[in-house]
View 1: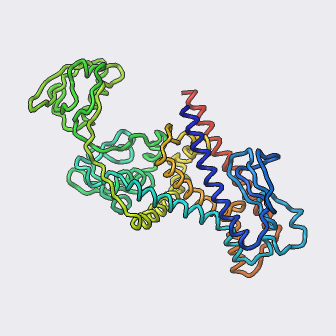
View 2 (view 1 turned 120 degrees about the vertical axis):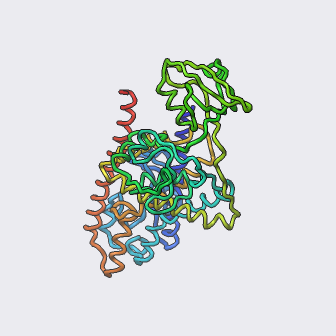
Length: 439
């Protein structure tokens, strides 16, 4: 059932984004009286699941869920319809329209994707606000594991800036560290700048960034499971752990480190309860966990927005997501980080979906993915919108149209590049699945 929910969410998000993106091409094409021969959700290689012709346009749903397309008459596109291009240009064809009209038609999909993300982020901020942990509220600093240590961080560090820019949100700091070159922290009362090594980032990506950095907290218990050794020993919710085997404990990570390193050993845990100190013996099981959970201090704050305030905030959020996605390429193309191994295709993205139906997640993911599609499509690669825009800008600047042979060759090269990328991405998905069965 969980997998079905994830698949439905993914297919619905992709379907909405593809339809709206293609509408971004379709509507200006129709406005400029350009014939649109096909409007398809997904690709109809050899056959389609559904099709219906209305006016000059055939609307349909293909069987290959890798996007969608509109086929505009008189345009060299992925259909490579050379026969049509051999005929004399007709006034209702794409190639007969002024360059500025063709440019508007080609950027329409990207513009729709960008504005869709802006609208979604605006409405989410207006409805839900923006909830986060302020980076400057971590009075005990951060907590890092061995992976965080490889990055050059230490438990107790207080984050001041990444690449010289102050970080407002702790959650943003996690991404900034992965994408940044150095981090400035306060350590033992001193301000120091730590270079973020490629080797450390490689460890982050190898473990998929799981818990390499958190925030340091006092060891105040929120939950004790009755059936575990902790429950049987008499530990209670609300207990503050102050020592183990007579050694003072100040922070939760100090306590968990001792527990994890003491399987099959007895620990004499000192707790503070109702102003009095009590000692409780606990034998740590083989798995190195005793059955207690931390009472996390309420560090979250929520910024609220009126509708008018949410509009510029939504725009800022969209630009930040776009900027972060552009910056990710610096990390992905750096082979030392191994980030390219984590690039996900459809299979991997399905696994990222919420296991339960969560509308906030649904719309947030759609906004993020809409920005991602806008960015990918505007890349100057033939066969993408950005490739067509590149040739159109050349024409508008030089006053000369590229020959149809150049456009056809560019389309073929772009198609080969895209297919190569698809092979790599799908290969990553499949290999990640195989590794799970091998492990």
